[in-house]
Structures are given as C-alpha cells and as structure tokens.
Length: 425
Image (cartoon, rainbow, N blue to C red; front, side, top):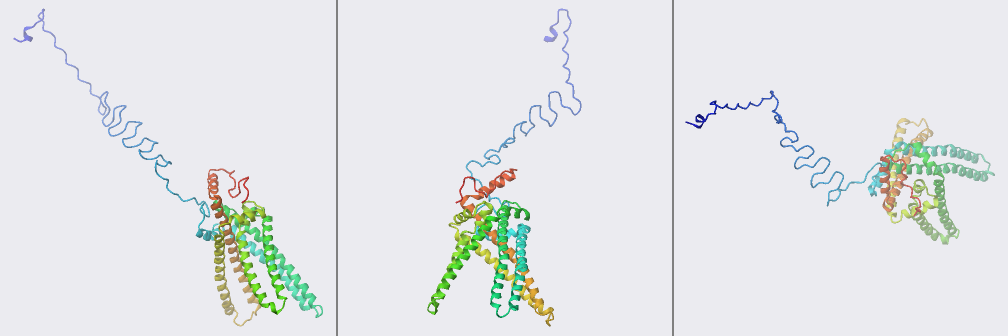
C-alpha cells in the first residue's frame, strides 16, 4: 500500500488536487509578448545588435564633432606636423608676393588685355589729341611762314625768314606743352590701373581719369623738372663743344674727341638718372608724395636694384620697338605695291598717294605708340610694387586689404599709402 493510499483525512474524504496553472495568453499575430521587443528590434534602452547605443559612437569611430584618434580637428594642424605650403593669393593682375623677372616682363602686356578700355583707350585718346593739335596748330603756322618767306622781297628776306622760324618754334611749343600735360596724366592713369588691378579691382576710364587729375600738378612739376634737367645737360655739353670749336683748326681733333666723350657721358648720365627716378610718378600718385619727397624715395627704393630695374625697362622698350618695326615695315611695303597696282599710270599724281601713305602710317603709329606707352608705364608701376614688397613687406599689407574687403570692411586703409607717422625713406 502506498503512502497515497494509506493516508486519509479524519473525515475520510480524499484531498483536492491543485488546479493546473493557466497557460499564458498568446499576443495577437504580429505583436511581441509583453516585456519583449518585437522581432528584429532591440529592447527599450538597448541598441540593436552591431550598433552603438544612442549618443555613443560605434567602436573605432569618433563621436560627432570630434576628430578620430590620432587626427587633428578640422582647421588645426596635427601635433608634430608642419603645415603644407600654399601659394600666395592672386586676386588680380599679379600674385601677392615678390615678382620674378618673367612676371615683370609679361604682366605689363596683361594690363592691356585685362582692362583695354581704360588703358589702351586712354592712351589712344591722348595720342590722337596730340597728333590732332600738332596738325591744327603747327601745320597752318608752317604753311603761312613758308609762304611769307617765298613772297618776301630780297631786302626783307632775312628778317622775314628769322621771324617765320621764330613763329614756327612758338607754334611747335603748343603741341609740346599739350603732349607733356597729356603724358603726365596718362602716366597717372596707368599707375592707378596697375595698382588697383593688383587688388582685383577693375576701374572705369572716367574713374581713373578723375583720380589721376587730383595729382596732375605734382606730375606736371616732375615732368617739367625732368625736361629742364635734360635741356641743361644738353646745353652744357653743346656749349663746351662750341667753345672748343671756335678755337680754330688746331683744336679740331680735340673738339671731336670731347664731343664724342660728352655725348656718351650724357647718355650714361641720363640713363642712370632716369632709372633712379623712374618711380617718381608712382610715388606721386599712389603715396600722395610731393615732387622732392618722391625723388628722394625713388632714389632709396631703387638702391641695390638698379640693374634689375634697368633691365626690365630696357627689355620691355626693346620688345615694343621691335614689334613696332615688324608691323610698320610690312605696312609700308604693302602700300607701295597697292599704290602701283591701283594707280599704275600715276593719274592721281604724287599728292594723293603721299597723303594716303601718311594717314595709314600715322594710324599704325598711333596704335603701336599707345601700346608702347601703356606697357612702359605699367612696367614702372609693377617695378614699384615689387620693390616695396621686397623692402617694406607690401605684399602682407595687400593681403590684409583683400581679406578685409572680402569680409565687408569698407573702411580699410589704402595699402599703398605709408602709415601715419612714417617718414618717406
């Protein structure tokens, strides 16, 4: 008999068996049981398998906004590493650094291409006005003077000839004065154009002329002083030769020798003075210097760079003159053949072809002369900027000005002006 069978309650009743536990309720189809995440999703507060918890970066990756381990944040240089070299900016005509010899030779001709209306247009206007004034003033004066000489009697011919020659000289002074005035203004225009195009600015012709006119009188003073210096030097040399020549035949050899030596000496002296003072127009226009201060500062800036300054100016002038000869020579030859082909029997005579030839050559000369003036004036301005970069750190001032302008600072000081309280060297 087993324990179950042998034990009975006192009443004789059999004990009730415990009811089986109810089965857990099944969730609806497609839903997870209570307390469990749906299939393919992580429980609340936990990240899915293979993913980092919320707010933390996956293993091996840096949190958002932070650089990975061993790398510097954006814009910073890693510890122990040198920054990579980057070339200086080039906002405009030239890079903002001391210029190479090749840049100094090529950039003057880029000025024409960058802003032809303000540069070539200004030069063409000035050249055309000079030629027009010469034709309107000197032409009639010469014609009247020659007519008076021919119509004068034998007794009055000498007096009439002297007076006519004096009238021609006085008439010739008018276009000369205008040419000096226009050349001074044109130099200021080209200098301003080069200086502003270096900063990436492109000014209109009217704006350039208006700015250059403000410095016209100092420019005229410099041009007059330069012409006076050349005239005094030539007059002194001619006077010495004349004094030796009147001594007679015995001094003929000495006169010729002294004349040759004085001529060569004048050439060397004029070249030296021209190079040493070639930056004066730039200093007058860009730094607002007076004539005397500009001469002294030009002398100082070119110190130690005489041969480079001379070489660049000489090569640009040589290139322009060579191109001028190459262009004008074929034009003359073509005209000769064309005149023969059009008028083989010379029906028009010599006056018509002569006038046509003169007008054609004058047109070509105006174009080439305008290009030459722009290139040579731009060369001087570029040399000035290069020397200030090398000696005074102008490239840093130009960079600061460009950065301030890009940030919207309209009150940035003109970088070409000397700081207040700084004396011109």
